[in-house]
Image 1 (cartoon, rainbow, N blue to C red):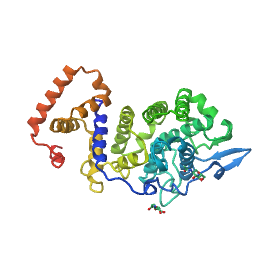
Image 2 (image 1 turned 90 degrees about the vertical axis):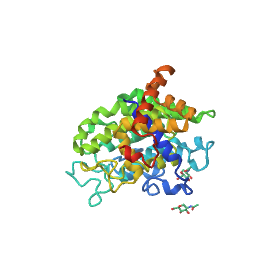
Image 3 (image 1 turned 180 degrees about the vertical axis):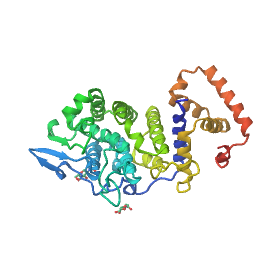
Image 4 (image 1 turned 60 degrees about the vertical axis):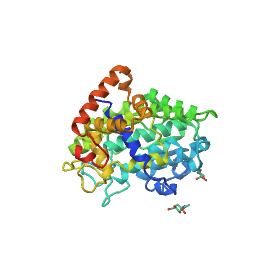
Length: 362
Ligand SMILES: *[C@@H]1O[C@H](CO)[C@@H](O)[C@H](O)[C@H]1NC(C)=O
Ligand SMILES: *[C@@H]1O[C@H](CO)[C@@H](O)[C@H](O)[C@H]1NC(C)=O
């Protein structure tokens, strides 16, 4: 049933397609984007090395801001204002983690990341912060290594967290020695990016390859973090990893507008044990549905079959088959058979499904 999160992608695409466009791009920038460092010279310099503390919200965001700035020229041919820069997904997700309290110390042993304490602090005990460390440092250092930043590879160093130092890497050479294959994937992305003939879909392919490789390399190091969270949040974290894999499989376009629309469906705070989707009272309907779908499988199939069944949209069907890799192994005959079985089940359950009575099915 591992293919289900990809059905989720379809649904999210389906919902977000109906959301209205955004007129002012600066309204959807991540939190404190304007306040973050925008050039390397905004950081401390020691022995002609730039020193960045990625355990401070603004300093880590600054790495993204510089990356977005330095890569903007390669995306100018796709749209104005850097909107189609597919690196936007990274700072936006990081911003969502900050806004929703996910970068704070989940053990509450310190006041790191809390409004009442050091609210710019990023906790090394946060599962989200640890994985994001690699999704910020590796793309950034690989960009330095690729020559995109205009400085040499040994001119940047990141500072370690207060503990667990050995779980991380801090500069181009140490990250290359720990994560050679992944760093090469980021380099491949930047090399292709600099080609005047780069195509949007191929850029997405290289970006997602580097992204999933980064997670695959690092996720195991932080499994002990799950215990710091409620069961619902830990479950969401695991589901999230699966969902990301499937966003990668469909080459979800991680542009500014698309990602910010997608984020409207993500939980706006850390989940508590008492949270039962889709009945969380302080979540929007969209957030409830997305969380529910992430955690539940059966209903998604029924619902999406309804979408296909009612709309009889063959292109849509083809699209789903393409994006759910498991379906690739199914021949057209067995696919149709399976489909028919599921449609029969759907008919038995409810012959007249619509989005508005979707909830009744739950
Ligand atoms: C967009 O929003 C920013 C800040 O909220 C504001 O300074 C700017 O003037 C706005 N631009 C437009 C075109 O409305
Ligand atoms: C990049 O940063 C420089 C210096 O801060 C700024 O002048 C320029 O407008 C930025 N470019 C983009 C595309 O954001």
